[in-house]
Image 1 (tube, rainbow, N blue to C red):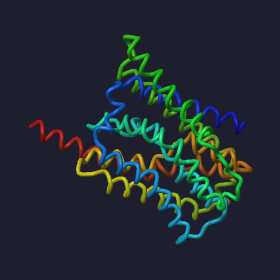
Image 2 (spheres, one colour; image 1 turned 90 degrees about the horizontal axis):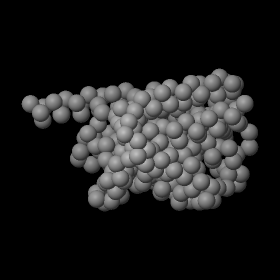
Image 3 (cartoon, rainbow, N blue to C red; image 1 turned 90 degrees about the vertical axis):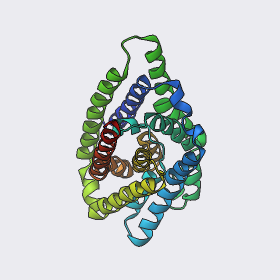
Image 4 (cartoon, rainbow, N blue to C red; image 1 turned 180 degrees about the vertical axis):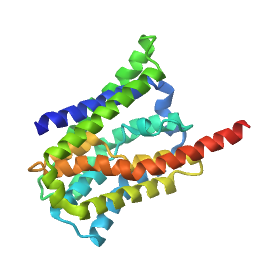
Length: 284
């Protein structure tokens, strides 16, 4: 049952990414290449500073081995295919879309590299190659993204409005599946205790701060990178967790979805209001 739910979670991620492609254009793909300084800051924030933050948190806030491994899995699973769902309403859609593609491609290299560095923490149990990660990125990001873009080009009624509808519907189902999985294995959450929730909340809050700090002078870019740092690639995290023995780490990784929403939604709501006020002033 759990395995079927996890497959459905990954399938829903793919559907949501396809919907993102339905609302995007090929020009959006290369936006970050036109802004190399922002590209470098984005890579450093997502792939270096967030994992290092997780290591620092575990040094100052000791937790159980299962919680430690879960936090590391979350921290190294960079790549943010669901960013546009969270960042609708900002005035930098090209950067957001380009960040989705770039971050997912880089995960092919960075996730196996971090796994090699952290091999001792995982007890040598999690060994994924770049090929393993590449297959996840291809199946949950690249192929659905290209399919969505092709549909937009070929089918007249495929547009931003349809993209938005599919994203919202899939997002609701994704959340429900996550809740069901957590409900099936609630004992693992009880075992993890408040120390896990506190550590996870601190990791997500710190990730938001890192992205906000390195996002540069443009407000919407700072918001996008902050949420990108706090949003991990669920497909990759599930792949890493599945390579570890037992369902415990998998359940704690899925718990990240709930804690992430609790921590990041207030920040994003505030930043959206700020962006809207700025645009209204500019139009006046």
